Amino acid sequence: GDTLFRMSLRGGFDEDEFRAWFKGLDAAHLLFLNTVASVQLIDLSHAATLIASHELTRGPVTQVPLVGPRGRLNAAVTELRDPRSRVAWTRVTIEFAVPKDLARTGKATGLTTPISIAIGDKEPVGRLFAGLPLRVPSKLPFSLNAQFDPDTARVQIQHIRWNEWLFQRSADLISLAARWQFGIAPEGAWRWVALKSEATSASDPWLAEQLGRTIEMSQRDLAKRLRIRLGD
Image (cartoon, rainbow, N blue to C red):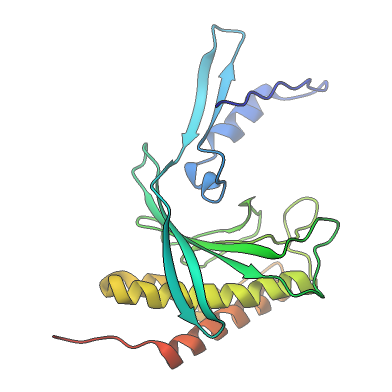
């Protein structure tokens, strides 16, 4: 079904600026929102005039067993597409068991936590997400989503143990997804392998360090476990 948000706005609200901001969004904002397929901005004062819309279509979820340093893990694989731009993404999600001595800051902590990556067929650079995109620069070749605890403005990932652990498990996911891709489509699988030079963050040395460790861990696991079959 549809959900309509109706809000009372404070004085000084700039309607034109808000419209421009909404129009500047894209369907990739919805990559990791399983229950939201589209968002629309509608002017109800003019016979429900549609101002802007962003939509992703989702294919069926396929369960793919992957084996890595933490044993056998089931990955949920989904194909997503933006009907307007025709950009398509492959999204891979794994639920990781949360250690008993770890907890989120001010939020409920589940027994497991999902971590996802999504790579677009026409997008050379991804983003960092915590459900929705974070306002954190990224040069990774894929988008990475986890239950990161950001600051209030979502411009920085907090420097806490919980987030460090999420980056460590992200390394497991990246190497697992890359090895899976090499097994089914080796000609394009290198796009799933991040480079150390892509672990940059000019505004946050801590984040750059975490990304560097994540990429290094994933590359080390690939070097140990990846086998590429040549010829017949």
